[in-house]
Image (cartoon, rainbow, N blue to C red; front, side, top):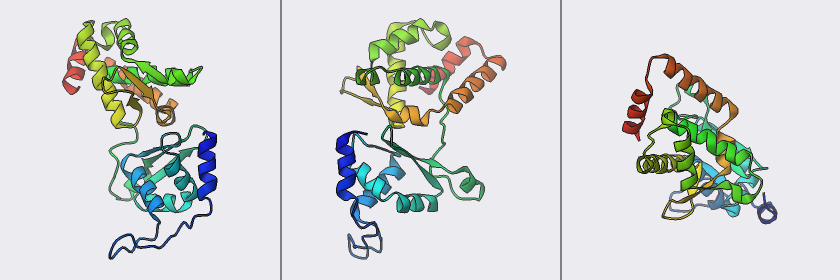
Length: 231
C-alpha cells in the first residue's frame, strides 16, 4: 500500500462503525454510508483495490470486523492482503453444504484450455515483475505468445488469435483480474487480484483438468473448436 492509503486509514480511524443513522425513510440499517458502500462493493464486484480507491479501502479496513460479520451472514468470507492492497470475497463451501444458497458462481471459474494458459502467463508476468511498468501487458505481446505456443492452444491465424485474446481479456476483466488501459484495448493492466485469486492450487487444478481432458481422447482440433464456440 502507498503512503496516501495509510494516511487515509488514519483519517477515518476514529469513525463510528455502527453509525446508526438512517439514510432514507424507513432505513433500519446500522452501518454508516461509507461502510455500506464497501459492503456492497465486496458483494457485487467482489474486489476492493487500495490504490484504485483509497477512501473505500480505508473505510473497509476500519470496519473490517462488522463487514466480515455481514458477509458471513450471507455465506461469504472476506480475504484481505494488506501488502498488495487487495480485498475480495469468496463463497464459503461449508455454508453451501448447510443448504445456504450460493451467491457467487464459483471460487475458481473453469476456463477453456487457451484461456487457462493465458492466465498462467499473466500470473507469471505479475509475480516476476521487476518494476511497476511490468504490470502492464500489450495486446501484441499476448498475441505473439499465443502464436508461439503452436496449434495446441489455438489457431495460427493472426487475426483470429487476436480476436480470441481480446475475448479472453474481456472475460478476465469481468472477474476483476485485468483492466483495459484504453478503449482500444491494446494495453491491459494486470491487477493484484490475479495473483491473490489465482493461487498455486488453482494452477495445479487447471493443469490436472487439462491433462485429464487430453486423456479422454479429445484431439487438438476438437478442443480448439469447442473453445472457439464458447468464446
